[in-house]
Image 1 (cartoon, rainbow, N blue to C red):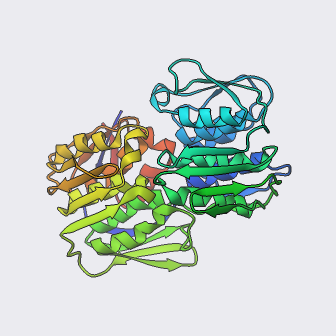
Image 2 (image 1 turned 30 degrees about the vertical axis):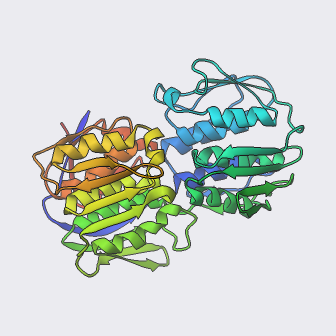
Image 3 (image 1 turned 180 degrees about the vertical axis):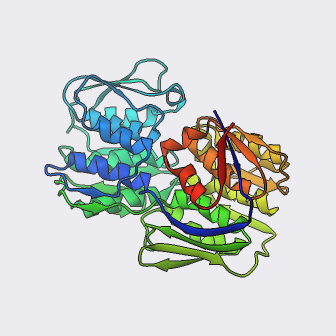
Length: 410
């Protein structure tokens, strides 16, 4: 399937209510499952990742299929390690290429019984009944996915002696770890984070009602539209100013592209500020990797040179996002190239997008589809396998239609 997108005018005016944050929703679902008395969760994400996790947490059978949902797979690995009986946790073919060895080995050190059924260090997993309690202290590389660390932290309070976790080296995506601890606190859990060490004593989660804030990662696609527009007055509902999400830094970074954010009671209003005069956009995405693709497209669309650092985790997402950006930006004469860096992965963006009805591949990656969609402000584009967006934002195209985009299946 291919969708063709185009817009006949450069105006973005409207009102979009964004879906709940997938990152927050998934953490709250796991925490709720660990509570003796579950609370009610309002405005859960409708993403496939979240609905998959919600479904798996209600199952009581031997095989659990997380599909392409990385967060779901990692959180379920920790959750199933606490359960009786032997379970099989599997996923899509792409999921079987995404490493989970560090998490599985950490859980085994604590007393879990996790075995790799195919390639060592990768899904699928056999997860048997564990014997926890002999070990309550771990050392783990801090430059791995924050989802591994979050999975360990969320089960820590229900372990026989809690958990002391020492993070070794540079911490990747610190805001996501802080998000996890903040959410745990809201459900009654005390934790200390001093230097590289997080300590959580054995304690009980308290079931509470909770409202999920809107997804700042999803908001980035509308900020791209705002940057490309001539006339702008856009209300995005559900976003919080004092957000738990690292991606909320988006509001700050987009001032460089002439987009101003006004916080109102039920979200934000985007308007044009001073005309963008930025020649080079520089940002370290170590704390907000999920919006790097959007900003690469914004730079290419506006002809702004970009220098992006902190991109290490982009290579182990749904696809190798660095390579995917190189491939697809090249179709509009924009260069996205890796540069030498003393630490991590860095890339440069050079060139101004020139559209000749490009057809963008999505690589089974929802963020590739959504990051490139705003280029339809400049002319007709097409997106292959467009419904990959259901992973995080099922109503993406319907919301774009509300803003005047013409979207047709071709």
